[in-house]
Length: 372
Image (cartoon, rainbow, N blue to C red; front, side, top):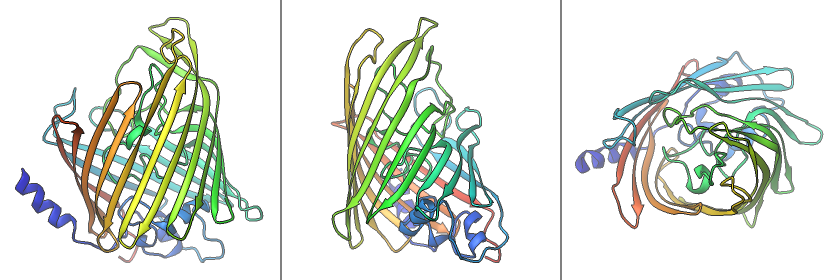
């Protein structure tokens, strides 16, 4: 297995030209590598394109495929609890359509490890050209320092972003039914969200687990997110969330769990070396349904080395406590191996010790941009 992994890593680290899924590349007649570093992760231009509602005002437009498919086949020699399949497919259908000044975007997951298909993201986006404010309405991700699931560079949720606190099953990575507004403020960017509900389907992580409890928002959740530069290659961020969950266990009367989360982040680059780090602190006023106050904390630190334009090797430490503490170390390598396919290999090791997991995945986006 070690020899096989080493051979795959050598192949992974050979950089390729990025092209990826063609919805927007066809529309504006660009190579997909203009927006993507490694499929599906966005580079700086890709993030700015997304921040403008997937529009380039004044640029000529062409005919485009409005629906695309992203298929991912993963492999692990040590399946997670409750599964027996070592090779697991996980697909997604993506759609984007311009209606006047409004962009409609849909991300439908096609199921994994026995889970059913479900809507992961689905929203309308509108950017006011005068004020520069981008509005989104629908099922959206929180505007964290990176995409927690849709444009992730590994197969494992980052640090605190997938942490459950007591009986509260709402994580930072869970998409919300929300209204969102974002805009640049000088060299920085701020965003605000008001959420009224959340996604309940399984994303890419397998069949949903029956817990015997039902949850919803007892009150809207409010979020505030800010990113500001300290220089050309250093950015800092602060985030805050506050809301209340209505939780019912085994049909018993529902109780309310008011909660808040605050976070800080750092992004820095020097040459080919990239650092991304995030730390969160949370408090649930009634996370156990018995009036018990539960504090939680966690985050991650990721260090990546860029190989060419479309390949990385990286290491990431994840940690969370809610209140039991967990830590792990993740090694990974990823690269485009064709213009439309990514190979990823990762190893996850618990800290201070325990069984490790070695995983790999091939991600393919179709159809190709026309003429390529």
